[in-house]
Length: 259
Image 1 (spheres, one colour):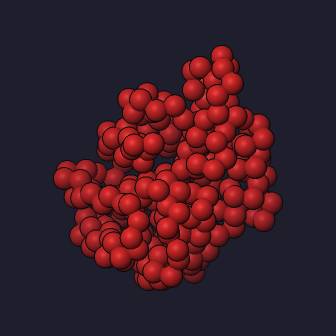
Image 2 (cartoon, rainbow, N blue to C red):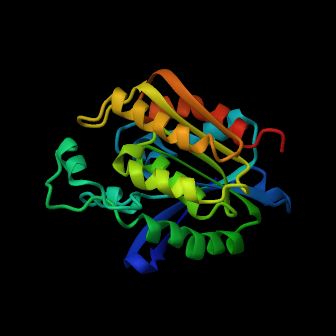
């Protein structure tokens, strides 16, 4: 069962559709469920809603994982370059614009902090009040820029987002900043962190070498933090929903392994 409603992002003065997947047995018991927050919700549930004609098919992913979770999908802002803005914690170097074929006069990123603060201070309290949730065990997952912002959320709020999966990460959008943040923050409360990159990633002029080098560079930072993490270079994996849904059930198992 997927419920939909609209909320306001107060600091950004925008409204956003939220899509919530509830386990099949939710209405038939009084159990509390752990919550997984995800970005780009248009591409999560139904192929017909996806920007690219195919989705993660998250309901199938959760079923294959054998887990009972509430999945909260947050629609991305599809207006112009606003998705980059909301999922980017910092404004990217103008050379990134050039590589993405975007006008250099446009600032990419810079609204990610407000977006994550919205999830923590407005959306999560709403979800915890509306549904039966395990408030202290919250996960987040995303891909590409969604992987970047999920990693940022873990670093900024490690006591809240204690299980994080970041697929095909576009760390290269703000490499120095995300690495500096990871170096400085205390991640001892993080239970599991998964991140990966495929060998056939491509976004405009940013190809596999950029993606792989960027993720390995971040791995060199995160391996010094002492948290339970897994990093994978996925042979043959492309930058799309089909690739992500194929590996996501096993990623979910890892996030909740042994607990």
